[in-house]
Length: 260
Image 1: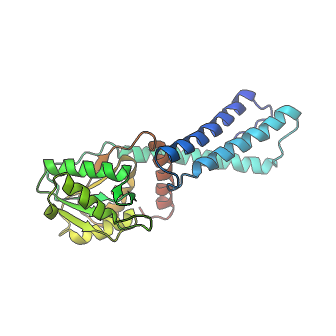
Image 2: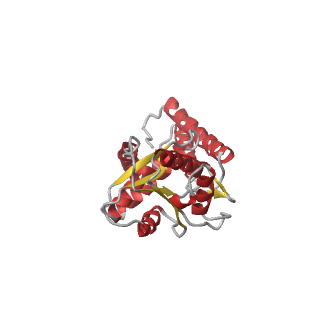
């Protein structure tokens, strides 16, 4: 947030536009998908920051007086914002690097990572993962599918059971599906699924959305020496920006804690 000695009205107007776009996207995300998604409030936080910057600089332009913020605080804000931008570009690049993942044929197992269940029906992300897993199995029928995901407090059935129901509807036989119903995170998806996998030479595919592949693969490779491959699931256009923002914070959290 740069507050120059001679503020530009045009640049300041861009911050106002950015704030409006953040609020508009928050509403579109809530109406188009659902409100209450993990970290969706961040769009309102960004809107508040942009509005605050706009109002502070608008006052400077109107009155000709210096900023209300102390010079030291402004420098701290500048440094913090620069660090955020640099880290965001680097981490998003890491996330995008996994988008091109392509699995080989005839993997021993594929693990379908859980996602939101609405009542007893799969949410959009989980529905796409189920479709991708089903498509892979129909082309590679010796592969075992591990449906991985527990039951959240607001879910009618476990994510694994939901996957089982939908996969069998799509023609995948029940004996080709293994249910793992205890996991509540990506780390646990891998950890508990590995209990059903014999030997460290078994090849494993991870079925998850494109934005999640990088973190899922890093998490898996820290837990076992099995060869892992990403199976890329597309993400809806409306939710893609939000998930990419959310994944930035998730990857940053893992890096800071030294999990990888």
